[in-house]
Amino acid sequence: MKKSIHILMIAFMVTICTAQEYHAGDHELLLMPTAYTMEAGKSYLSDYELFFLNYTYAVTPSTHLGIFTLFPITKDFLETFTLGAKQKYLDSDFIKAALWTTYTPKISGLTLGTVFSFGKAANGLHIGISTATEFETSEEHWEFVYMLGYRYDLSQKFSLLAEYTNFSSFIEEDFNGLISIGIRFRGESIAWELAGVRPLESTGDFLFFPLLKATFLFD
Image 1: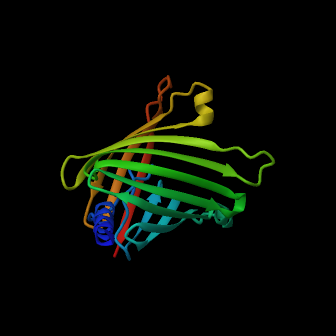
Image 2 (image 1 turned 90 degrees about the vertical axis):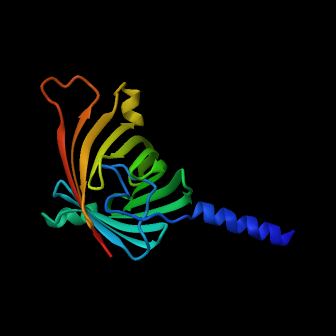
């Protein structure tokens, strides 16, 4: 009986912890995270709009630890210093899932979230939800963020990316959310993304806010 249980446990662990090769940029779409993680010992540096930097290191094949900050334009950039962690807890062929958290000491800001990735990295759907609060405020308020994204690889080097994002407070005001559409160019150790972000509202002549991101992968 015990032997059978041990066999079942090993089979379960193999199913949940199957490894998949990581490529530059797989850990997120344009802005929303995915459930994919790097192999242990790898790290990446992402630069968003030339103003925001994120360095993340894979402690294990399922665990990321990172630092996010504003580019050091002034000494106040230290106020944006944010610690982050991501833990993949489900890794099957069809579905992967991960938890993530961030903490910003200056404002005592905490973010907690989870994301589910369906299908393959090259052609998959991603659904995420997170909540954030600031403990320094007199009234504790948890803001929920709802995320939906899809990636489709046109080739080994090009991917189409799309995201939808909305916030609980915005939904209360009948805001229809934000949509982001872009393309990713992927090399052996770098990924470049060019996208446009716009609200799903009437905006007159305004079409898209540009989003530029670069991710460098280190072994």
